[in-house]
Image (tube, rainbow, N blue to C red; front, side, top):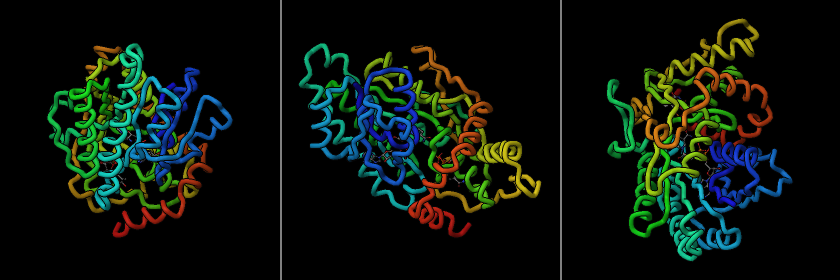
Length: 353
Ligand code: NAD
Ligand code: TYD
């Protein structure tokens, strides 16, 4: 079996659902259920004996040791993190706690477990750390896309904490021999994406008749990847990645934010037209920029293609259409995640918008 951390969040839940749709290998899912963790993401696995959910913290060493000893996984895949840049600006403490201290404690518990395995299992074991392209900092308009050899230049508390976690993972390999793999992925989108991030926020605000807040001039560029393609990349790296290596994962889909928002509006105009016949684009509102806002991210994913044959299956056009449809088809999920805590965040973040 495998141990997944953070498997009730956006990418982790998609990963667990896809994993169990494709294989019968059981998953132990350790998730603290922060505001971003949602057991409803895993509702379709209720009663499925292949999925064992445990609420807990990756930094809880005795719990992690118990889970490892009890379930004896062949791999650990670490999704657990605080993941939202804007939240990291308001309150970086939790980011240091989970992304840095938590990853350290998890690594150390896994090292103890791994060292005690029989030779054959020790050799086959993998610790796969899921990270982000944001560790590389910001690109100028004509810079080449991020390669695995780019220097780390994180600019936000979030990306700095993820960079620190990547360094710890690297050190646990070089110093202790732990068989690690690291993936650095670009911006994901798709089902179960918490509506504090750009794409789901725009969908839910549009449908609610609220403003669509675009930071600064809206010309910041991200490289968008459909979440299920990220999950397939992780499975590919887990199966065939070279121990100690990092692999960049991206969608070859660089787009400025304003174009993303306009695309979402156009799809909603087609699939759920506004009652007054106007375009949702009329709700676009430019607001104060994010402090330290990275201008451009772009991933060069050629290493993953060359070594392991991975390429994304979705284009942006197919992926965004599926995503908008998913939000239209799942109004209950949307209503449930917009809890009191969510409303508090929105009023704090967009107070002056
Ligand atoms: P998310 O915020 O939706 O989910 C994070 C999950 O981790 C939640 O279920 C939360 O409850 C859990 N968690 C938080 N702290 C924990 C702790 N201390 N112990 C156990 N569980 C804890 O995040 P996501 O978007 O699904 O991202 C998953 C991973 O992928 C993160 O490591 C993130 O840095 C990385 N990543 C995300 C993106 C993206 O576009 N979303 C892109 C590249 C990399
Ligand atoms: P986000 O989804 O928070 O991801 P990240 O900051 O990790 O890339 O934001 C994506 C882009 O969208 C980023 O450039 C910030 C911008 N953005 C807005 O313009 N308005 C918003 O309300 C949000 C949440 C993000």
